[in-house]
Amino acid sequence: MLKNISVSAKGFIAFGILATIAIAASTFIYNRALVANHQVAESELVNQLVDTITEFSADLSVTDLNLKTFLLTGKREYSAAAESGIAEIQDDIGKLEKLFTDEAPSEVPKLKEAFTAVGEWRTKIVERQISLMRDPQTVELARAIEVTGEGEKFAKIFNESLQAVKSAMATRAASSAATQHDALGIVESVSLIASIVVGIAAVLMGFLNFQLVSRPLGNLAEATSRLANGDLDVNIEQGGKDEIGRMAGSMQIFREAAIANKRLEAEAEGNRKKAEADRIADQQRAEAD
Image 1 (cartoon, helix red, strand yellow):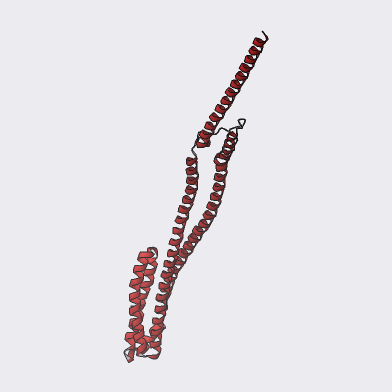
Image 2 (tube, helix red, strand yellow; image 1 turned 180 degrees about the vertical axis):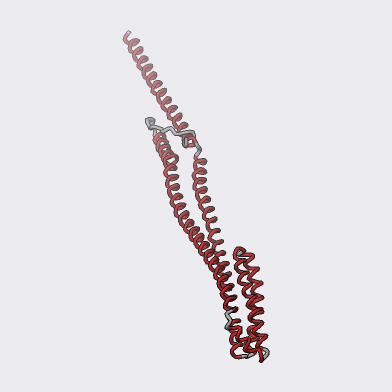
């Protein structure tokens, strides 16, 4: 069937097959690369969320430390630092809630539990202790609140809620890393397989080109040269319906015509010699008479 397809069509088919393999592999690799890039962005986002939570927790610890130092020393700069920290924490809560609502809505309930604990710690512990410390008669009462363990209760709720959020973020980061690793592994595998397939296809196309184009052309060129030198016994291999096959058919017609001409020439030469022999014989009989 391939012998009946034109040489140019064979070339287009070979190019089309190789191009199709390359395009399919490139499209798949591009898709997996997009997945990997998305997972990289996902990992960066998770890291940002975790860093924000860690920074929030650190601000809270610094504020608590300033409050405890104020309770021990009574120095107003620690009170001011604690109040400034509380204001900053309130601002961070709004930013964190918006960030998690946009990027990790499933973790918002746990995060709100932590924020609720922070709010109760602020109103029931921090603001109350600072207010009591401002009156010399209630300083000891402010310090006594510290030993009730109420602050530690809020801290425990806060830490547990925040730890749950961090654990969820760690799970999300691990899933993202696994997906990224899988995508990159598939890219490597497909790249290798595509290279092998393209190589095999190229070798196959080269073999078919030799069998269907180069070899028949070489045989036809040799036959043409022998015909030009007068060798009419040459065997012209008949191909299909492509250009090479049509050329071989034309050369076969030329060969048959040359053989017919040679046969006619031989017959004419034989007739001429016979006529000449007859003429000489007639002349000799006439001279004898």
